[in-house]
Amino acid sequence: MIKDNLQEIRSQIPEGVTLVAVSKTKPNEMLMEAYEAGQRIFGENRVPELVEKFEALPKDIEWHMIGHLQRNKVKYIAPFVHLIHGVDSYRLLEEINKQAEKNNRTQPILLQFHIAQESTKFGFDWEEVSEMLNSAEYQEMRGIACHGVMGMATFTEDEKQIRSEFQKLKNYFDRLKASFFQNSNEFKEISMGMSGDFQIAIEEGSTMVRVGSSIFGSRN
Image 1 (cartoon, rainbow, N blue to C red):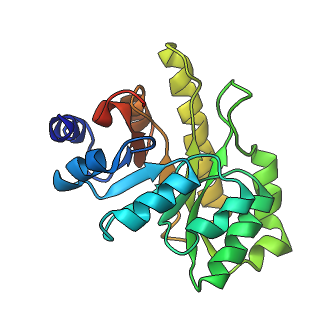
Image 2 (cartoon, rainbow, N blue to C red):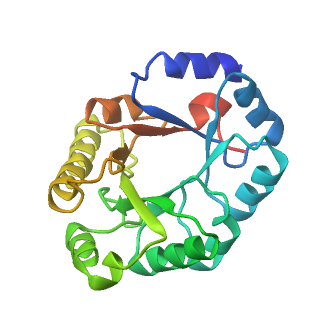
């Protein structure tokens, strides 16, 4: 079933768009089914579960931290996490930088913008990011590499609203690229789109989609 689901989703994703299989709450057996079907990129949103899976599963898996990350948990994933999607505060960025330096790593991250109408979702606004990237403190950070942006649309049936929120994130990406990252080849990711809206996200410029229930079935 998982293999078939993966094939179905891959057939809908153009070349150049990365599929992150969102495996949170799923047992290792299900991840191994996806792994055996060729999937190597998995997304988790809870640090203890991510660490357990990293230790138990094949070492060529690329682990993405996709949920809200608390500062006191960064140290547990700092040695191995491939990409942190949800950097939503300056203090979190500071902690990631600190832990990356301790591990002699440069940690790829995405800046999370608040694009939804729901207050429960996390993320920066434009002014906060602009101020942060202009700061001397940010310029001195050697443990992080900003690879792009991430955002989550409002949970709604209104396709027009979802589309306009994704357009907003693409606009933020374009402005950041022009203002701060014009010489950075690695600043290229727009992580947006999940099981219910990834096709709209791709149409609006997503380079990375986070799909869980369409691969593994509904949440446990």
